[in-house]
Image (tube, rainbow, N blue to C red; front, side):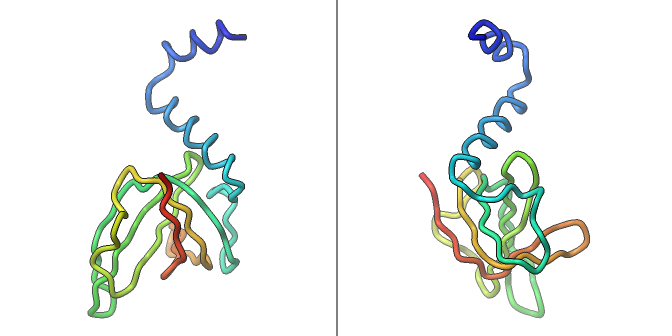
Length: 117
């Protein structure tokens, strides 16, 4: 068994190993996987921030934070904000709110969030 792990570690792509580690980390937190999000229901998800961008919505800025848990992705939208301290790509975060859908993306507007070390 240990030999198999060593062989996998040296033969699998780094991205696949990182994704597996992220899935394991999120499972340990007891949150729901992003690929099981149900629209218009309260959710508590965790993941790693993959992108942060400012998008105008109805004439006001909105900070869109896309996060991934290795299985799926969701976007947290902070309306009226250009910046949230500590929210940077690569940072891990827990997000709570009601999920909505826009096309193929899940959006959570003005969520509660907890930054993880």
